[in-house]
Length: 132
Length: 329
Figure 1: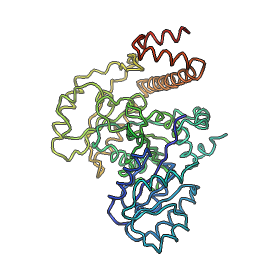
Figure 2: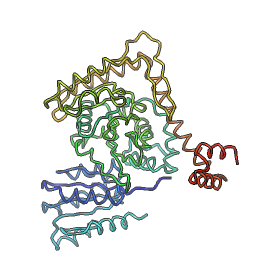
Figure 3: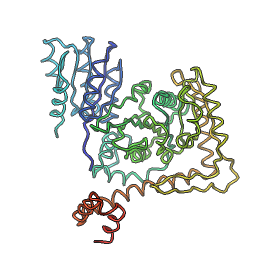
Figure 4: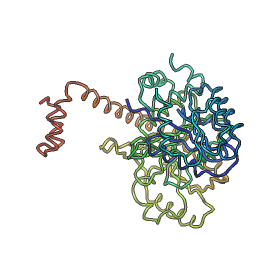
């Protein structure tokens, strides 16, 4: 039996067009031996949940710089759950004010990373979160 | 029955089964056995070509066409390379297929090549079986950006589309063996770019040199000949089509050429002979893998390691080692 690969969907919901951070993370996860499905800019929550379903990912990584995280994150979690994928771990990278972090964690977001976060931390947290 | 939800169209069950198949889990193997009697109905379309020729955009447009014009259910298997060093991969074909989201008649699955070198992954053929059994009428397989020898797709697909773009090489590229020979349909994408006439001329002269009387395929190191079937059906000459995948120009004509190729396959008997060749190569691949793992998991492991040492010390050649192992010494 071949080794189980960690599959991660990297998506950018919302309307901001800055995807450098998402690409840096995608590449770092690739170099850590993960299979990264990259979906590109301006994804709706519905598109993200559909891609997560078709790709049977373990993790969804959202890059949100627009400030719309308090609207987008719960919607995506809800759609994943509706599809029967409540076990998928959702991480967020981007600009998240300190006040919002506990609220997002409470909703079920597994990790939040701001500017300057190290990719090693992200990789370690993903590995930890998907441990069987 | 373990696979009943998949046969009934449950998309989460289908997706999870694909993962089990890809990881060669025991549940995946038993599910494939259950599903196999339901396969053999779908039209398998391969799309291959060099990186950057627009394969993903073309698959996007072609699928939109199939959904609008025929309401066919379409599955897309998009293969991208795995890193040879870390085993990781970035699978980016979905970026060009966003027009297809929100349609329950389409299922896109990205696949990392995981060390295979022929342009597909080891489990791509098994994915095809799962989608076929799940009732997808058309299965489009997009290969790794392929150069010259990634021709496994021709063994898997009924209809192979080779995508070219203007300005990618001179006419000597066109007469090399390999990828052009496997084309059932040739597409020059990005046909609004300069140089399209030169590309078309080079491809056309290559095709006119070829006489496709019988196909000789390389099969596990042996050359196998598929005899041209004895019928009155005319030989298939691959058409050359021009498309602009970003705006859909030429897509209805492409779909029409694919449909003509499908009826040609049925009339000439090639559909059955390709099916036979494909299943034979799948059977051989599984047999090879199974024999190898049985051999090594049996009592032969020690003898194998000793033989390997002798090979490393140059005392035996690999051929002598295998002869000794199989003769039980």
